Length: 145
Image 1 (cartoon, rainbow, N blue to C red):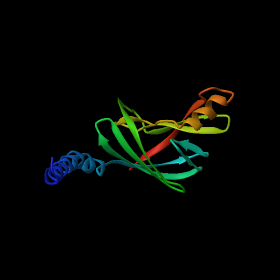
Image 2 (image 1 turned 30 degrees about the vertical axis):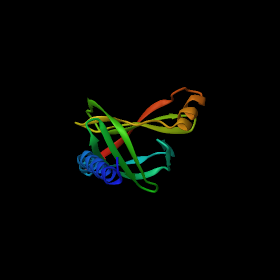
Image 3 (image 1 turned 120 degrees about the vertical axis):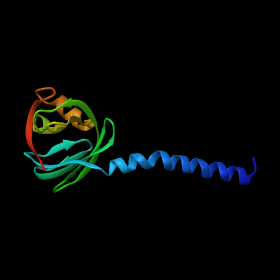
């Protein structure tokens, strides 16, 4: 192949990639849900650690079973999560507490899917080393706007 042919192939590949990505980027911009909650203690949320306090959140759909959750407060985070098709009856943020550590595991939004978050390795280790393995589940009230 000569340089001109290689350039044409590269341009076509770029156009195909842009076309494939564009619909998913537009979907990611569509906000599904907004609301607020209050964390009672310092809490691990994925790779982030959020101090106790009031927070607002926005959930956007990225794909059929993927959500983007943005949390804003004293500290902020953006995380992707898996949406379980189970419809929740009430809105709550679930954390596991054990030995002074708290870890967010999922968010249930009334009439919507259960959003399941990954737990960072350090948070898993903290829960595992506590006197009550896996801790106790605590539901924190979530207000949906």
